[in-house]
View (cartoon, rainbow, N blue to C red):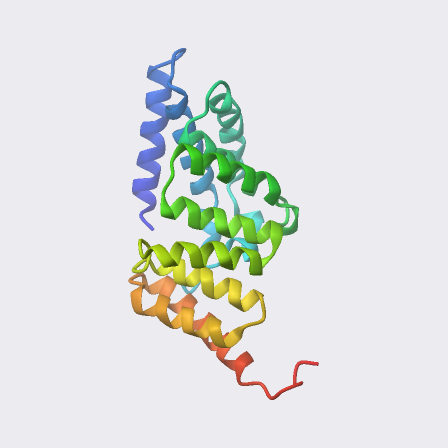
Length: 218
């Protein structure tokens, strides 16, 4: 992760909002808020070995509360009137950052925001992210139908995160054999070393689960 580029992007975002006051475009404000919120979680995203720590397992004490506090009023400002795509994305990031624990995350509200984002900025990647939020509200099985529908179009067939998301839903839904197939497909496509190691660990977990004798987990 290029922390210098992140810092420079935030500096420029602050400069744009300062120079355009009091008529700063809402999406410029929203983009600054989004960058602040995403960067606030930077220190918790990787462990000491450089391996990925997924959001639900991150140490939230390591999040930059100063940046979060700076961003939240900007999100509120950007949401006034007719919010654009950056404002919706910033609102989603804000809900994650406001949750003290993973189980406190307001997933129903996040899903509603993804519904809006999908209407404002329809794309297969937005629909994939919406399917993940849908799973957190309605469970992995109904969300699998959404992801399989996306996979059927072929637009994301070479996108490793589609297969990783499908694998995770299958893992959560108790289908380790099918999950292993999707993790294997994701590994064939991933190019980032940290992500590769994460997917390899997940694949090892589901393969071990799949190979357990019948009734071993009872």
